[in-house]
Length: 332
Image (cartoon, rainbow, N blue to C red; front, side, top):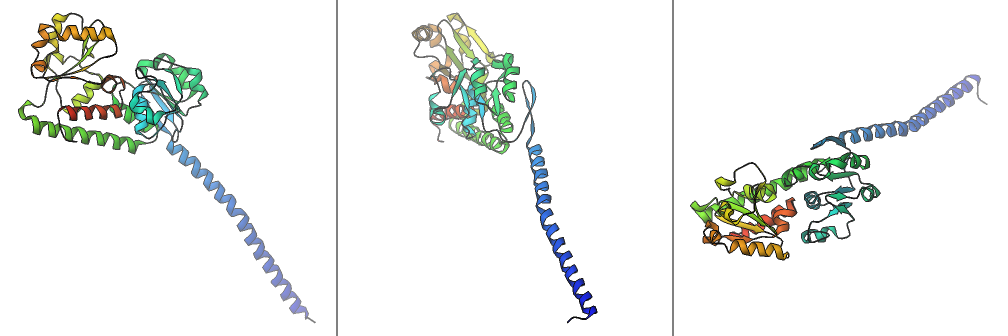
C-alpha cells in the first residue's frame, strides 16, 4: 500500500500531466483558427493590391484582379486581345471580311458576336457577364454609362493608336509585363527596318510617302491614322504639303491629283466595288497622275485595306511592317 505522502505525490503528478495535456490540446485547437485568420487577411491584402485604377479616355475605372471574361468593342482591341493570348468572351463584327477578319479567324473561331462596332448589342453583352469591357470613346461615348453598369468599362482612344491600346489593355488585364514585351518587340522591329532601309537606299532614305484611298466618288490622302503611325515608326516621312495636324484631305476634283505627290504611294480601296474601281481607273489614267514622282519611279503599290486601315491593332501593325519589308526587298 502507498503511504500518505506517496498518495499526495501521485495526485500531484496526475494533475500536472492533465494540465500539460490540456495546454497542448488548447494550443492545437487554436492554431488552425489563427492560421485561417491570417489567410483571410492575406487574401484581402492580395485582392486590394490587385485592384488598379486604370486611366482612360472617359476617366478612371477600378479593375480588380485578372479579368477572365473580356468583351472587346472595337477592332484594334480585339486584335490586341489575341496578342495577349486572350480569346475575348465577345467581340463586334468586322467591317469587311465579315464576320471576323481572316488573319484573326484561327484565334477567334466560335467567339460570340455582340453586334456591330457602331452599334453593339447591350443585352448580348450583359448575357456574357463580362469581367471588363474594352470600348472606345469615339464609338461608344453615348452608351458608356450603360456599359459601365454591365461591367467596368475602359474607353480607349484614339482608335488608331495601337501602342496606346496595348498599354491600356496591359494595365486593364493585369498583364503589364506582357504589354511591355509586345511594345519592346515592336520597337526592335522598326529599328531593324530603319537600319536595313538606310543601308539599302542610302541618300534616298527616308522616303516621302502618300497613303491614298479611292472611294466611289472621290479620293483621300491620309496624313495620320493607323497607317500613318506605322509608317512614321518605320521611318518614312510626309511631303511638306501633308504636315497639317488633321486626319488627311478629301479630293473631289482630279485637278487636285498633284497634292498626292510623294516618293512612294501605298493605295488601299475596296477592290470588289465596281464604282471604286472605276474611280481608280479614271484618276490613274489622268495626265496629272503620270507626272507624279512615285508613278515615274514605279513606286506605286496597292495594299490590303484590312491590314493597312481597318484592323488597327498591334498584330495588323506587324503584318503591315511585314508588307513594307517585302516591298523594299529587305531581309527580316
